[in-house]
Each structure stands twice: as C-alpha cells, then as structure tokens.
Length: 179
Picture (cartoon, rainbow, N blue to C red):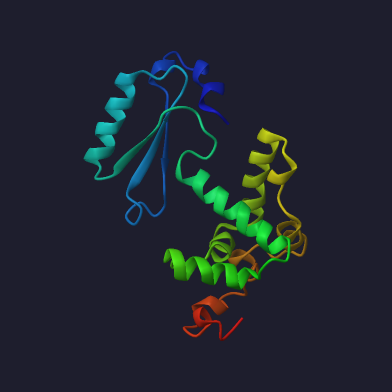
C-alpha cells in the first residue's frame, strides 16, 4: 500500500514517513526512507539523523515507489531469472551458479527465493502485476507449479532445492559437478 493512501488518516500527514529495514540489520545496515506526498523536509531530515545515530545508512526514496530502491533491483533480477527458467533457457542451478560466480552472491536468486518462501515471492509478484496489469509481470508458470505442489522453499523442505542440505552448499556444486 502506498503511504499516500494512509497519510490523511493522521492529524499530521507532514510527519508520515515509511522506513524499510533489511534483516538482519547488523549485516545490512541501511534503511530506505520513503516520503509520502505530504511528508515535510523537516521530517525527512529528522529521521535521517535518527538513522545515522543508530549506526545505519539512510537511503532516500524521493517519491512513492513500490519496492523502494533495492527491492526494485531485486525484483528485476528475480523476474528475469524466473522467466529464463520458465522459458527453458537454462536451469535454475546454472542461473544461480552464474550469479554466484559473476556477481559474487553467496547464494543464487533461486536459493534466495527458497529462503523467502515461494508463496511469498508469488504474493510480491502479484502486487507488481496488479499495479501494472502487464502480463509479463504475472508470476510465471515455473513458480506457480512449485507452489501448487506445496514446494514453498526452506519452510517445506523443498522449493527449487531440497532442504536441509541443498545442493548449492556442496563445494563441488559451484563448479557444475552436482545438480
């Protein structure tokens, strides 16, 4: 929900601001600050200073945006890798390997989606789809099929990988020796 949809429910819409922390905060010490349509510059600056005193880096989102900053970047990656696998271009394992090797991610996007929960990933994708109405924003079949089978990721023991010992944790997996 956009901040502007709720800011008028307060007596002080000029003091309404959206703060988005990334868990765990001690590993991701940043906070995205998104102003509403009536948020004052004074409120933004006050909250920025508070974030600094908490030892975190404030990132300012200048206007309302579904997903703030980083989640929009993550969404683009997630959307594209799902479409790559859904279209049969590559396996989820090789997509994860590419991201781990080239970008240096500790785990790939499919392993990360398993951590988040595939049902949660679908629900997030539905927000973007409902907002745009663009069919390319709809959750792809590969994701929906996993959910239909009850394969929701770590929480069910199976998603794109099988848990508790997913293949990507084997040291030889990154070299393509195990899938």
